[in-house]
Length: 279
Image (cartoon, rainbow, N blue to C red; front, side):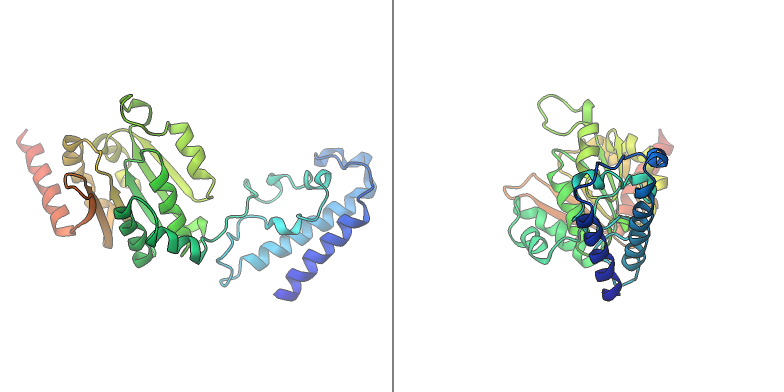
């Protein structure tokens, strides 16, 4: 594997250096009929990329997402040559998604602020969580850190993040991201991102059936109490036997996250169902 990877990288580097003084190569494949002497190079570049993708698809290669094209293969190409590698050749996205380093994850669990949110990142480590649901994105700082923590233990293609927030419907006094900004911010990590506008009740009423098998649910302390009370009805169907629900408590001098047991969740959901029948 190492030999194949080295050969692929060296080959591209040699090809790139050998024609640095050539005219610029057109970026659209359809124009190659007028530049036949470049066609074999394009074919070879694409073949080398396929080899690298096969290397990255092995079980040991979890550090880099195997569905992305490793840009180290084209790092030595002149800028004009890099335009050849249109994402539609192989994948709709070309960025390399890196595994979160040990140092960065240690900083999240030991040094990050606010202090009480470190419990979230430690829980992600404990569960090796890949399916995350967050009620209340706010400014998106905690959301990004949750994804970064998950990337320490799993490749990006395996991670599914769902964020529920009011977005544009949020009051002017409450800071937070707009829907478009949140999507752009979180998509850069290459994970599967699903953003659901609305309060906890209305959002989970629409999305709960698509969130089965959730590993970790994080409930921020700024959620509307009435909407959250009604939303418990939908939470049990989202969970499996090892799922964890963390609820932020902000009423004390030092906020903290408390785990909500599945028995308590069932009780809250049952209470809500009974109230619904009575109504």
